[in-house]
Structures are given as C-alpha cells and as structure tokens.
Length: 156
Image (cartoon, rainbow, N blue to C red; front, side, top):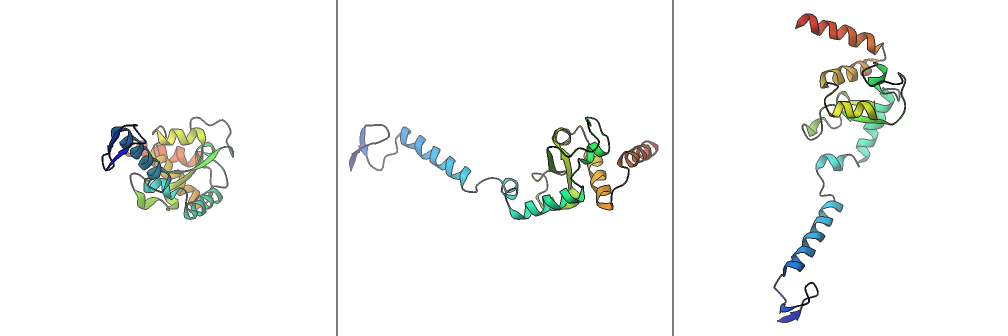
C-alpha cells in the first residue's frame, strides 16, 4: 500500500524504510538503550542501594579522610582532607566485576588523588596497602609507607 512518508515526504510502500526513517529509528533505539538500563553492568551497579551501603561503609572505615592525603603522598595539600571524596575501586570494575563490593578493593580518596589513582601515578600496590592498613585500623600511614618502600628496595 502506498503512503505519504512522514519522514521524507515522498510516497512509497508503507513497509519501505527510507534513510530518514532509519535515522529516526536509530536515534530512538540509541535513546532507549541509554535510558533503559542498557548501560554496562559497572555503570548500573553505581546506582544500586548495595553500592551506596558499601560506599558508606568505606567512608566510615576511612573516617571520612582521603587515605592518600593522610599518607602524605604526592599531591597532598592538607593531610586531613575531607573535601570532594570518592570511593575508588583499586581494580576497576571493567577488569574484575566480582570485586565490586569488596571493601579491600575500595579506597576513599580526594579528587586529586582519585585522578592519580586512575591514571596509574599512584600504583595499585600502594593503593592496596592503604586499604589494607585502613582495614586494620588507623596507624601512621606515612611511616608504614616509608617502611614498606624500604622493604621493597631491600627485596629488589
């Protein structure tokens, strides 16, 4: 059956999909995929109550302080930094989704140190040690890092 196409204005069979109609279909599908939970699992996880509970428990474990600032790593302006904090996954969810809710894989960091952790300036080994020591209870993190780096140099 011939019809006037609302997409291109031409007359063609109703079953025919003109390029303008295909573009509109693709846009709608893209919108639906984006807005109806078609994101990657790691993106969906960050919107769950489970994540919020884990994030809050890490916040309390780390006493609401950036552990990298507390250890006085590069980029530290204020040792007791409570500004612009985020829970950082040491091993990214894209690499190992199973570690998404493991507190040992999470670290509370400020925005500056979060960027440094993400780009590898602060190694995952150091991040893991900070999370481990925070889990054990607060101690002088700078002293522990210095001791640990000396042990690493002696072993190497």
